[in-house]
Image (tube, rainbow, N blue to C red; front, side, top):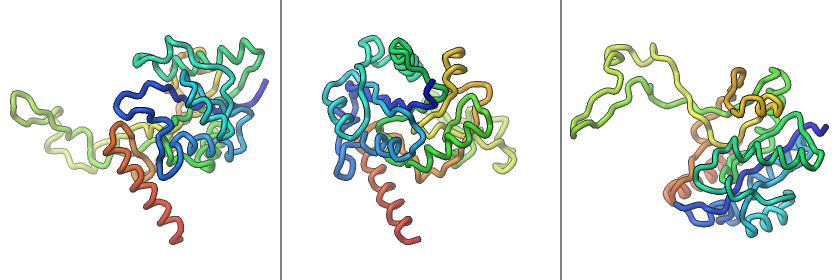
Length: 234
């Protein structure tokens, strides 16, 4: 049984940013950042891309990833979940008599992923005997003080928190949307990536950017350049 696989999920049907997964990000297809980080991490027996798109497959293979099969039609629409795609990939490998102990789901539009972050996630996975490992980002303001607009007027969603000091409210976090390490057997048993013993790794907001529109794309490029400048200044 092989130790670990990187599964980069890259379907071809992006609506808001056409051809998003292979669109140039600071001069090269954005998916290449994820592929390069996985290859450089040195902790994967297999780095593969799950896609339904022949052009994405060709770009991925040129970058050094494997595309041993194309994704099924049922898992290529807007309603397929990440878990659905991962289960299909693992089942297809099992049909080829290839199984893995650990896997890492990596998103194709996450240029802030580095080999070091992937290796650190793997080390945490092993050390903690975790079901899965997530990168998370702390919300900059207490979500317990979130507001809503109802009938044109503003009010608190949880008014009971109005007089509680910010520092006394429980910190909240969101998924960085970059990668997830997980134990394959436990994932297949639960069909969930967020499991009972999921261990968090906190990262800064500067290292994370959802890319859902052209404005997000520009912000991500700005953050990337800033991180490069900060790294060079050290």
